[in-house]
Length: 521
Image (cartoon, rainbow, N blue to C red):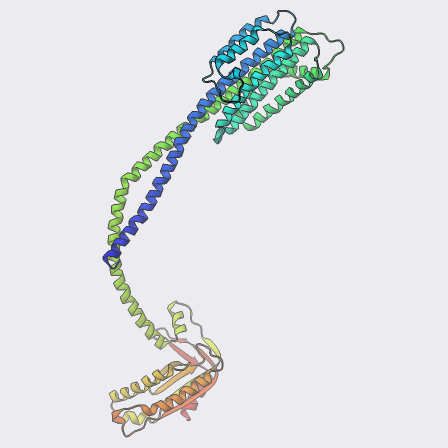
């Protein structure tokens, strides 16, 4: 932010960074809000469908009872069962009228297009009483199957979310009730006739019995409510009732076609009463599952309302605090811009000082060693198997100092070492130190260069001997500066010595021999 345009761009960027999460949050909240609205509408539709399913279930139950009464009347010779029919007709008509609506979609027969058509159709059949129980069984089973399809379709439409297991259990119990009703009817005809009229009737009796047992076990697997209700049913019926039902079933299966078939109204009545109790309890189980499902839907509606209220509060809070947040971001960005300008100036000064410090440190120590020292790494002495150490000295430096003032002596050394420092940059060497007129250089350390170290020192030495004659010092017109050089190649140990003024020092016989070579040169 060094310019006005840069400041504006940064403010816009910061505003955008603030608005993006706020916008995402609002979109997220709005998405959840929309989903919850849809869930709420779906839940209302589910409750409506469940109410329809409950009414359909009651209608199916009443038609099953009417079917049993008609089949009983058809199978009986005489009017002993006539009293049942009028009661069952009234219950079925009331169940039809209780339906909240009448599905009239495509694919259904004409008699199911409306309540009136179906009622007229049913009354015409009632008027023409048949003495054949098979005809009555087929007629009512056909109508019940249509209503069961409506029940399954309504359940399928809402069979989602967390209630699907209860709906599946509800389907299984409805199927079980229908199978129990058919079993009761076939057993009733068996006891009234004393035998099954055909093998098909016996096989159907065994089939519906097995299907009823399988569906009620499936309902237990899907719903804990079904399991609990069945336990209550068993306790209510008692062991005697269950044993009598099992005894009847075993007796019918063991002797479906007795030789001397004689009907028994008392056995038929006993069978009918026991199975009616069982079927009615399964019907109660259906109602309990419907009630449990409705309770879950009410709980879901409550949860949806709470979530919608919470989302509304979150949206209001975001919209309320958004201007405050944007204003705070603007002032914070302005403060950051001012601070960044100060920080930039200080950073430039610090960087400049750092470069100066690094330059001084690199003059004192090799660059690789200096970098390790800056990172607080422990510096360990390093051994070099081969390196060349160079020493040089000014011949007659003592007499030169005696003939000149201290300032002039310093100028001489400064001019001379500036020349040396300038020339050694051309070679792969490292300046170790200068002590008085002594000048120490090494090659092959701290960066190894193979076998080139001796050649580098030798070439540098020749170069220095040649360049020293070019040194022009006005007050040394009568004297010629001479340089004495010695160097040696061998094993060297190098390391940083000292903490106050650390120096990169060389140790070993190679250093001693190089110094001796210089002194004896």
